[in-house]
Amino acid sequence: MALYQRALSTSIIQALNANHDRPPSAFSRSLAFFSVFSAPLSRFRPELFQNLRENIWKIDEAGYRKSFDVADNEQLKPVGDLGYSGSTFFTTPNSKYLVKSLPRHFEYHFFQHELLDGYNEYMTKSPKSLLVRITDVLHSATPCVGGFFGVVPTHHVVMENLLHSDQKSDEKWETYDLKPTTYFFPERDLFKGKLTSESTKERLVDEFRDKLKLRRKDSISLTSQLKEDTLFLQKNNTVDYSLFLIRIPVRDTRSTESSTSWRNGVPSADGKWLYRTVLLDFFWSKHHLQPKATTGLVNVFNLFSRHGAMSITTTPTEYRTRFLDMVNDMIEIEDG
Image (cartoon, rainbow, N blue to C red; front, side, top):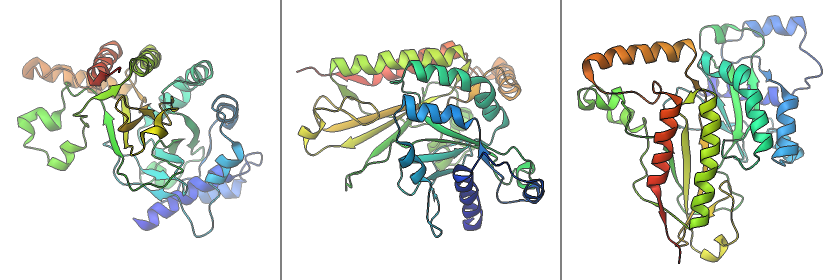
């Protein structure tokens, strides 16, 4: 596993640091074809993402490149289990960026060839959007043995990491990957979950068992932005996205007064917490073959079981409604 992670990390770093004005030679492509534990990666539409980074999100390009300019004995840091998708995750040594693989063909095809132009236009017009900021996409334009047999992922997204902090703290940050829990989850709901291990069920969906204690203006800021962002996703036929919430304990409430960004941290109304949040995982499109097949199977199954829709088989409109209801139910307004 260590060899696999190191090889994958190296291929990601090389792609992000490569001079893309000089395409690989035929000999290099021939050698890359026989790669098993690494894929010959390159940036996908680098000019588009550089424009977003520099002109829309005001990310310092030199600092961005330095995040991936690791020393010979350094690598990207593998991250443990962050979900249930089968993706691999790495963070940069400075923890500012997260690299996630997209192992499903229909997901990376949808994002790269259908959603990306709309995402670019939307983020350009809505720089305060809570859609996660995807700063690069890596793909394998050259086929390789490892990719063909599914040994190594051939597509990755680089995105902001909200768990990054410039200040060291001993406080424990709480993280929640939130989706509506009222959908049918076979691992949890069939035979009362007896056929699935507890660890598997725990990874299905998080639950936030407290309230987001917000001032009215912060509640309006959050819900209005999420309404706009999820409408964009609905129009693009997307479901199963999630709200990634971070709750950070605060000792000195004076340090929270000036923060108004949901990426940097919005203070709770009682001054005890900072909340950070973004929308993640908007790659499940309803019109591709695998989602259509899954929807058909679940619909047939429900003729007998009456369990209802899954989060991946419902309609984009219905998913958005339940998602926004979930967010509204989490909020408790405290003006004082």
